[in-house]
Image (tube, rainbow, N blue to C red):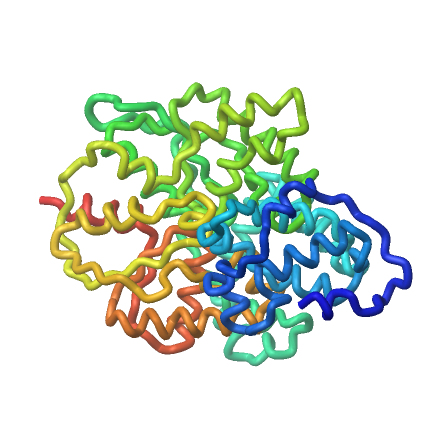
Length: 438
C-alpha cells in the first residue's frame, strides 16, 4: 500500500492540504480490523479501496506526499459508500464519516459539467421546497400519465446520454397522485397525549414515498403523539454533507433547526435513516459557528429515528395479524451511523403471525448510499447482486428496510431478478398491522 502511494505524482510538487484535523487521521492505527466490514474491499479486494487505505491516502495528501487533485486519489475516495460499517468495527473509534466528508468537501469539481449539476441540482432544487414539489410532481406525472411506459417500450431510453437510461430503471413507483395531499400541520394524538413531536418529512422520502410519511404520522398519533408537520421543509442537508457541499449543508441545517424550534416539540422524528444520521450530527456540522453550535447540539439531542422512538415507549398493542415471512435489511446510516439495530427488529416481531428470519450480511450496504448508484452505477449493481443473493436465501416474501434509498435500490434488484418480494418500510408495516386490528 505504501509503495502505491509514494510513486511520482501527476502533480510534480504536491502541497500540504489541511482539510481535516490531523488528530482524527492519527486515530487510525492501520490495524485492518475494518477490512472485513468494508463492502468495496469485499468486492474489489484492494487496500486502496478499504477504510485504512483511504485514511492512509488522506494523510498522504495532508502531508503533501500526493496531490489532492490526483485522479487515483479521487477514484478511491469516490468509490467509498460512506456506509460507516468501518466505524462499527473499529476498536480505536476512528470517526471515518467525518474524515470522508471533510475530504469530499475539499475536492474541487471534476469539470464544468459537474460544477453546473451541483449548482443547479444540489444547491438550487434541493434547497427549495417549491422546486422539490415541482420535481416530485413531474416525476409522478411521468409515471402515472403513461409517459414512462411509452419511453420504456419505445427504446428511447437506450439512446439517452450519460447512462440516463440505466438510471431511469431505478425509479420506483411513486406514492400518491400527481399532486400530493398535504399532511395536516397538526395531527392530534389518539387518547392521552404522550408527547408533542415534529415529523421531518425529508426530500426524497416526501416526493417518492409520501404515503410513508402519512403512515408515520398515523402510527405516532395512535401511540399518543401530537404530530406537528411544519410546512416549507426542504432537504435536511444529508445529500450535501455526504457529497462535499458543506456550506449548503450548513445553511440547510440552520433552516431545519429554526423550523423545528418554532414547533416547541419534545422530539424530532425522522423515518429516513440517512437523514437521521445527519440530523443527529448537526452539532458537528455547525461546531465552528458560535451563533448556532449550542442550538445544533440541543436540536441533535431531540432527534429520534421512528423505530428508535417507538421501541422506547409502551407501544399500542392493537396490532392485527400479517401472515408473511419477513426479513430485515439494516440501513447503513441506521446500523452504523446511529447504532440502531435492535429497535426495528423488536417492532417487526411484535406483529402477530409475522415470521421473522435474519438475512446474512444484513448490515452490509446494498449499494444505494445516497447517490452512489448514480455516480458508481456498475459497482453499485455488484453490491446489489450480493444483497439479493442473501435475500433469496431467506425465502422471505417481505423485505423490511428503513431508508428510502435502500428501498429504491432493493426494489430494483428484486425486479431485475423477477422475484415476488414486497419491500416495505417498518412504519408502513406497523400502519398496516394497526389497520388490520379487529
